[in-house]
Image: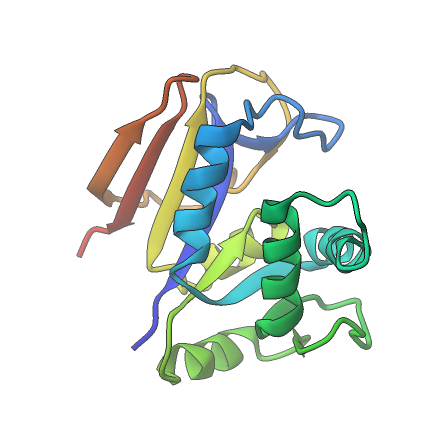
Length: 189
């Protein structure tokens, strides 16, 4: 059975974006890029909320014909074009990006059915709203967090209002030169 893994960059105080929705506080560099490539290698289907999906859809396909795209960008754009993508949105009526599945209703049932299919894991990329919904439904199996060395003080949190205590077991961790800590957790059973 596939797992549903949340992959998210968070500030030290647990925010996934700043109060303006910005992500410029993430120290994205070559080391973090290589780590992200390792994460992508375990992805059978990326999962997005509406906002992240629209951002990805408007950017990555444009790189396929961009002569200035780096090798890494072009490889990622090709992967995204080919891979089955899942978007969770109660407000979208259709999706147009190649090979994308829209889950509008019956989220728990649809995600459970996807988890039952063979293949690599389903990985939620960012998408704090969708991640919060999936967390509330008890569907997230693992949390892959890159904890950035910054305190934002305010912003968007996945864990705000989770309702109850969520106990996690640390599976692995790494520290990067930039001060980022990459930690993988599973739900404590």
